[in-house]
Image 1 (cartoon, rainbow, N blue to C red):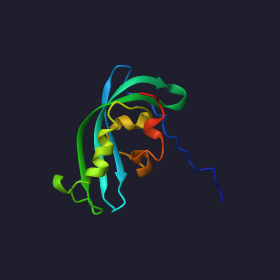
Image 2: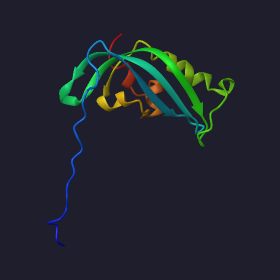
Image 3: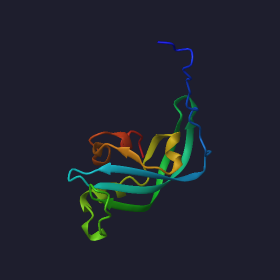
Length: 128
């Protein structure tokens, strides 16, 4: 096989678009056991930047929007939201986390459900 014409395209390195003190919307999503998707948008305040890891250190300061969709992407009415899991979403306010620079582009970061329930310590690594 002649490989002389293969062009390798490298993706640009992730970069921070915010500085310490800035706030940006961070969208998180979890798949619930019943197949629904829970999506929450938080304001995240930049507390630090870890250039070597391409990550921000942020504090989740406010829940600004949220929705729950069934497995086909159909929006559920608020009265059908899973109160158990939305209560856990509310507990994330004030938490400090590290998150990849790519999270500042407005697209949802998909997490394992265990990060929301606390079975995985992602949102609880840093002391309050």
